[in-house]
Length: 187
Image 1 (cartoon, helix red, strand yellow):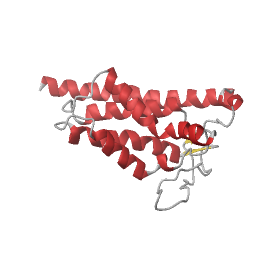
Image 2 (tube, one colour; image 1 turned 90 degrees about the horizontal axis):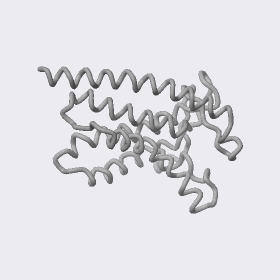
Image 3 (cartoon, helix red, strand yellow; image 1 turned 30 degrees about the horizontal axis):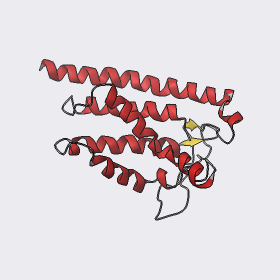
Image 4 (cartoon, one colour; image 1 turned 90 degrees about the vertical axis):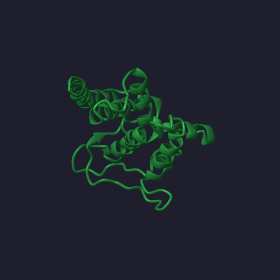
């Protein structure tokens, strides 16, 4: 899995993408929306907490059902009920994209970059119980088996790489979204 920081930055990127793509017609401006999208992109990792509560093992359920397409659809639908009905259809696709970004990142996360199999996720749960792995990895996986591995130089390097990668993405998306919204305001 990628770190929560990487997932959160990707969620913020989804919010900025929504702002620019809709040219400001879907009002997702402000820190509340950015924070909300950061949280959305991290939601599938709540399975860590479930593992601890139900099995006294953080890893018991990780990358399981919460990392499936079905979970993304169901979570999107449930969260949709919290949205104002007039804006629901405009915002739901972006919620889906933010949730799905987590799974896509984890799908391409592995022990090494390049032509090394990814760790994979249970993408097709409950229809198939096999872990779907990509034949290559785009992101390093965070080591989190013990507290010593969680707080390690390796993980600091992984998080730094994610901040650089997603930070650059955020920078360009923010500029793009601002330019598109400003252009609509002027026209």
